[in-house]
Image (cartoon, rainbow, N blue to C red; front, side, top):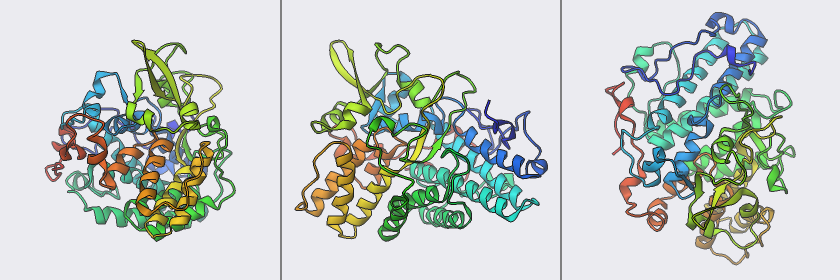
Length: 454
């Protein structure tokens, strides 16, 4: 059992949502009283570690594979043969669709956990250095969850403390601008306080460059091209990170490309390395997978693209060759060698490329795209390409490089207004209304001030 789990400030709900309070969470029997949780550095640090544990301790939860699976199905990355995901695959979401409640309630439980940490650290007698580090990690994780909530559901309540649970449960949605300003401010504060060095020998606790990497993404999504480029620059310039030339090493726990990873805790299933690997990789090597990369996406790979060779795996069903995502290659295995990779260097090159493109720095944008292509074994794109051509090339590289990771493809298509023209060619009856993700009915009844997406 992970040493952090006993210090979690509250349990992360799997499905159970109070019928009248979406923030109500029952405390676990192993909970450490709030006052003692921050009485010394070791206990306080373990409490923060419990936050990361709660995000990755059971299968098919928000941060342990679920979001990647459902958003890959909504887009054109890969889909599942399991009928519980059909409404995502066919883009027929309703407020009653399975798992939608988890995509809301679980990030809010992590935000509540982060808020408790920030308040507990501030009120403690810990040293200023420890206070700064732990508060910064909690701010980073709080923004990470708000980033996904805001991009999934557009307008969501902004809750930054635990002082009045009833008031928090009655809060209406913040505007996109309010959420964006909050995320930037919180990450800037975290960047000042967090250590640049990793805490420990692994990359499972965020450092300064993890903050910069997330800030680069936030800036990009808001169209702040200059700041997105500047933040990505900082990460790319750090020699601790490098594009792994062997694609089979990118998602290992020792990967030099990793900026931030989550470690599976294996509370329910022995030998799990990552929950995505556990879900997607068959128990028997010769068996079929129940996850299939969309045919149109398989066809998008150029000849000799190493990403198709290394990150997809063929299997046969009814004499037809299908492909499953294969970035994580282990269903189970000991010792653990793979960690859930949340932030990695390749994304920063693609962020910088998009930021440069939108500042009309075309040669520099191509240079970044070509770094990713050349690592994949492909020829560099010519410097004669115009802006529109580079934009399409970048869209394709983001699709193939980040396939199946954390909903990147869905968010990219939505934020660039490309969902309708792209997905209507892949899916039957895909329409403008399919772009919005509804809030689950179980969530809406908890707060009369919440608003359903149009």
